[in-house]
Structures are given as structure tokens and as C-alpha cells.
Image (tube, rainbow, N blue to C red):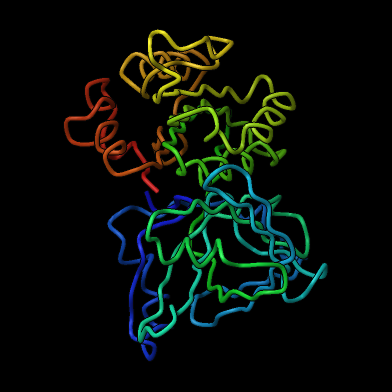
Length: 311
């Protein structure tokens, strides 16, 4: 669940901030996602160095309220239009701020959602959580304010040598790394990977990247298929239809939905990347455990733990 709109705060002493920031990702129990450098050409100047020891100050240029609890925040890169972020698909940056009166800074990873080849900008989608110090600070930012950022967190997606299929599963705010990964794959002419994407949300108002995903589906109808699982009040038996029942399913990302997606992945060709990773998952802990835990749904369907990448 490392790449939700807003994640658990990480507290460190100010004197150890740089070292701990650099070690943060390495210390996580999940395997790093390998990203391809095709999105990171040597001919372009990168805003972020290759390690997280040195921070950058990014200035807010725009803030958009997307729904009741989520904002899209756009930052200008220090080098302006002469550089790109250097963050690769599915990877993240580490934000840092010190709450008023606190001795310790709070670090939080976020996955950018902008076009990674777009110069001069970095864009984040931030969900605000009750009493969330990191997300609360992010939601307090206005144009002209600055944010301390480190990164990018390491990773590299290896483009398969031939056509492959992968299954991406997101729960709520966990869509950001999944969206970034899918978008990066589809934008790379050398990558022929097909993406099956399942996104579980509490309500249709939580489908905060609906327009962007619809555009990707229209541009790549043979390579991207998105299904939304709506589990809140709109999923009750007496609730109105959500529309296309193949696109909007009532309920959770359950065994039926997963088994259907796996069949499609298996039917269309080789399932999984060159490292054997077949499923890419990001969501709340309970959802991840239900889907990919020791006795989770994927295990019941024959998917091995090593075949699942959890962000």
C-alpha cells in the first residue's frame, strides 16, 4: 500500500532526516518495482538526483479540488521547462514537512500522476485523511507555497521482450501507482504489454481519475481494460443501476471479478512480465490482505506470492 494518495507518517529526528529518507524505501518489506529508463532519457535534465540525500523545494502553481476529500496539486520543477522530474512509471517521490511545534519531520511517499515526459511540472493527487498530518499539510498548500521533496524512490519496469499481459488491482487511493504504471506502459512504443485493471472504490465519486482512464482506454482499446467495483451505498440491491454492468460492478474486488480478469489475461497471451510478476496491487491493508494475503483470493486462484508485486 506504499503509494496511496496519502500514507502513514514517518517520524525521524531532523539531524537524521537525509539518511533515513534514503533508507526508507530500502527498509520496506516489499520488493522494489523495476522501472524502464525509456521514460527517463539521458538527453533530458532530471529535476531529482539519483539518491534521496538531497532535497528539492517545489513551488505550488495550481490546486484543484477533485472531489470531497481529494486535491490535485501541481508543482513547478526548479529548472522550469528545461527539465523533467526523472520519476519513472509507478515510482514515487518523498515529501517532507515539519508540523508546527514538532521536533520531528513527517515523510510521506506519493506517486506523481502527470505525463512523466512533460517538462517543468510535477503533479500529485492527494487524499485527505482525518487527523492526517501529511495529507492535512498537503491540503493546506496554496499557489506560491513551497514543499520539500526528495526522490525519486528507486525502481525500474523492465519492458518485456514480447507481448505480455498483467493484472493491476487498486483499492481506493491506491490507484495512483497503478495508473502511473499503466500510463507509462501504454506511452512506450517499445512496450506491447496489455493491462487488465480492477479498481475498487466506495462510491462513484471516488473514481477521481475516470476521465484520464477513459482517454487511455479510447487511445489503446486493445491494450487496456478497466473495471470499477463499487462497494458503498450505490451497490445496495435497491440502488439505481450504475450503467454499463461490464464496466461498473456492484460489490468488492472479489473472487468472481478476479477469476474473470485472470481468464482474460491467460487467454490473450503470456501472463506476467519477464520476472514472473503477474499481478500489481496497491490498496488499503485489509483489501490487500484479502486479495493477496496467505489465504487470500489470489492464492485460492493459484497465483503465487512471488507473482504479486505489492506497492
